[in-house]
Amino acid sequence: MEEKFNRLIFIPIAAVLFLMIGYQYVCPADSNTCYFRSDDKGLFQRYSSGFELVYTEPEPDEDLPSKITSKFNFTERDLDRHVDFNIRGDDVMVFLHIQKTGGTTFGRHLVKNIQLEQPCDCMPGQRKCTCHRPGKAESWLFSRFSTGWSCGLHADWTELTSCVPVVMNKRDKKSAQKSKRNFYYITMLRDPVSRYLSEWKHVQRGATWKTALHMCDGRPPTQDELPACYSGEDWTGVPLADFMSCPSNLANNRQVRMLADLSLVGCYNMSSVSELERGRVLLASAKANLRNMAFYGLTEFQRKTQYLFERTFGLRFIRAFTQINSTRAASVGISEKVRWRIEGLNALDVELYEYAKELFLRRYQYNRQKQHQEERVRRWQERQQRQRLHRTYLAELWRLGGGGGGEEQEQEQELEEVKELEEVATTEDYSSQVVRW
Image 1: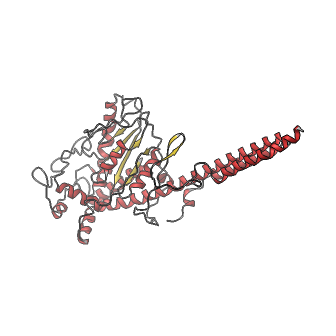
Image 2: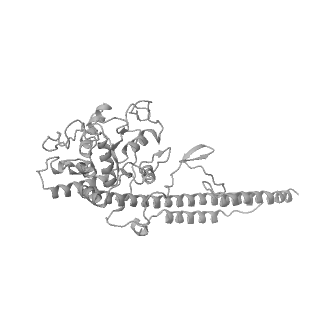
Image 3: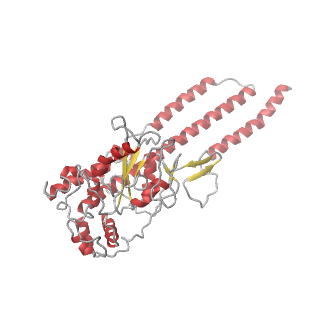
């Protein structure tokens, strides 16, 4: 009688368990299959345990070409950018802020918009924020809005690489010999014509940046090496024609100059090498420094800049970046002749931006593919876990119902799962997987 009762109760229990297992197959964890869609968009998804950070999907409103013209040979090492940023240790993020590249907006994101264990302390009415490591009175960020212009106004690569280690060791009272810091340089770039026009409009309104140091090889440039383009306090109201006519205007090829190692060409001494050789060396240096930086973004691709930063540093922004195309530079109407003139004055920047744009978009494509692969492996592992639970339930029910073992079959299935996981986790060479864009 008791055996008959056990068999009768076995049937409804088995039915309930099968329904539960079937539901897990149809609606797996972290899936939107069984949820109603919501109009809310953000960087957070709510779970019972709180908030979990997820990557944002860049919106299709940015000018991303369907096919990326392959002009430069980038290796997988160039594309695979990941930094194990130790914010609790001695690592420092250094923001190289090039004028009129959206650096002010990005700089504010760094101090006000990153999800941190100990967020930056930004007091109302103060320009600088205190960005300390968790439990330490030491800064993890070197930027305009955290440490100020400690190495000079809009310091370039040449100035920062020689100045930042000294300044940070002094601020944190560390010995240069004992301090083993990692300095991760980041920057923003912009389309050269738009950037040039934006700088002209800024100077026209009275900006000068004349307090910039331009230090190189331990000294600033002389008046003969870097003559002023104007007399008086500023260049307010300057026409575009006059702005373009000044040969010593630092707006020309500014992005290359600020990213290159100027000591390679005698700093600001134009007579040390020929103009052609100087341009070639500076461009090659700027490309190498940009490629080896921990991260750089493009003003024209705000959402992709956010995505790549998050993937590179493993940090998450609280709010999504916004693409603003209605800038002062966009409102300036110029003829094709004037555009050609600006491109000629910024020929090095034009070539650098072409290089930077392709590398940026290829890094984005590479990271998207890598993320999709990681998600496939994660889903496969979750599926295998559910299948193991399924077999455990069935084995237990079979035992309660008076069935036999089956342990040998389970061991064989587990061996097959391990082999399958190894096949899924094994990644092929990136170049063999990428469809030509």
